[in-house]
Image (cartoon, rainbow, N blue to C red; front, side, top):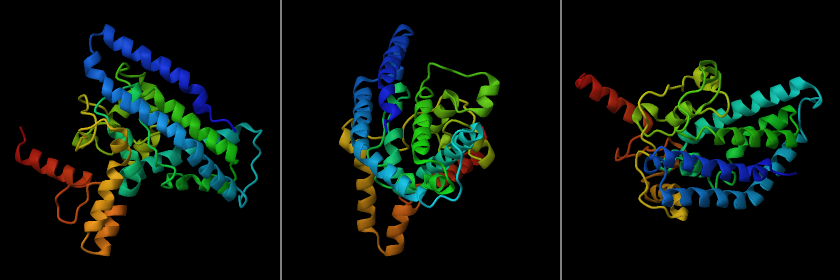
Length: 297
C-alpha cells in the first residue's frame, strides 16, 4: 500500500514556492509569510510524514481488524460504492474535526495545525505528530465495520487531505457562488483558522461545507480573520509546537483538586478551567455578546 500523499509532496513544494512568489510580486509577502514560521510549518510536516510510517501502520491495522466483522459485502466495482464511500469519509472527517475542537484530549494534537499566525500553503503542512497515536482515527472505524474495504478507507482519507491543501491560501478570494455553497473553499477555511470570537470552532468541513450548514457550525467570512490561537505561542520551536498543549493538559491534571476536575481537564472543552482563569469558546461568546449588548455602537 502506497500513501498518495507522498507522491503529492513535489506539488506541495511547487505550489508553496509559487504562492511565495505571487505575494512578493503583490508586495504583500510580509503579511502572508514569515521565514521562521514557514520553516516551523515545513518541519512539522516532515515530522508528520516520519511519524506516519509507524502511526499509519497502526491505524491501518485497526481498520483491517474491524473489517473482519463487517456487516455488508459491498461490490467495489459499482459506481455508487465510491459515492457512498466519499460521503461516509467526509461526514466522518467533519465529526472528527469538530470533536478535535470540542474535546481537549484531541485538541492537544489538533492545536498544532492552528498554531501559526499566518494563513498560507505552508500552514497547510503544519500537521500533528500525535493525532493518530492519540486515537483520532477511532471515529472512522464504523466505515470498515459497515463494509468499506480498508484500502479504500485510507485512500479516501488521503484524498480528503489532498483537497484541503489548496484551501489554505489568501491568494484566492471567493470561488463561484455554487461552489461556495457546497464545497469547502479558502474563504470558508480562513474562517476556521480565525481566532476572532465569532469565527471560533466554525467551518469544520473537509471537502463538503454542507455538513456545517446542516449541523449549525457554518460561518461566512466577513472581515479578514486574525489567525492563530486565542493565546498564541511565542516560539517557533517545533517540539514546543508539537507538545505544548499535552504538557499544559498534564500540568492541569496534576494540579486538579479532585478526579472529576482532572477528567474535565482531559475530556472537557479547550479553555475550560475549574477556577475560571481561562475561557472556553462558549464563555468567550457569552462575554462578547454581553459586551456588544452593553456597547451597541
